Length: 347
Image (cartoon, rainbow, N blue to C red; front, side, top):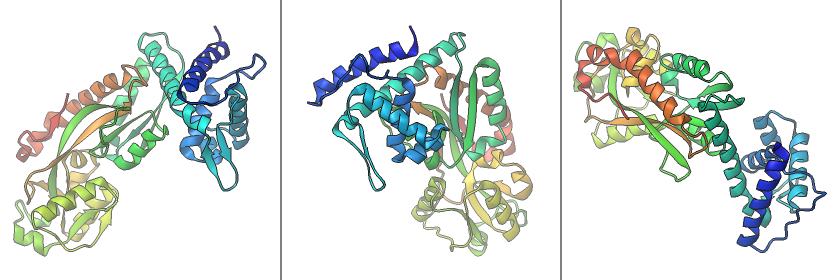
């Protein structure tokens, strides 16, 4: 059975469900254009982007193609789904009713493809991953290499961003799964696979010595993470609780810049163990020390839309744990004995 006939049957089921939810007139004429997966995908992208142009950019097609797909979908369902003009982009009652079933359809198709892939049936598919900077130089390359060897028909693409940016990308379907820390509230549409507990540590310029005391810290420049980062907010909250609030000066959104400026100023900063081990040349720029405040940590997990990729997210999470163990944890406590078990891979 071809895609058009299969999806037409699925669309009829969706419409039947929608009829039961509300009194909306849907027509499924035999002469109507076929319901297609691409049309449902375009509809969801347009609603989430709130723009035909932005949806076209995300899907890699032209705005006119997006408009054609939407028009074809409305013709197939016999209902107006979106009111759109130069000033307005609004779902109709029918569009609002159709949105959740359309999202479920996308996830069901994605899960079916993932099951075929893991069963060695090898359908072509793409998986978009959002990662964090701390993993770029350590586990990402071997992890992706293993995945591409194991699943040659999956095209993996990866972007790197802050955890809150990755969370937004997952919620709007700009990515299929993400690695993020401490920013994603529990939601019934998200599955989480814990990866590690990452303790915060202090780093300081070499000239501050082997054990900087509190008087030295108060007299030295403190380099911060940018306040829009969850990492930065978490550090500031702990400093406030500990009545240690250094004067504001430089703020950075990248790890490499934070370490470089800490060394340049002869100052100190608070970061995490994963960040220290995962940033090239960090050990040449700064020295790692125990925190001058009570211990605290963050948690990292792999997140995906629940059920959308079958067993693939759990397998990917297991691979990340393996590479973290080989590339970082094997020598972590030897290099920083004060971690004392606080740096942990989570199962």
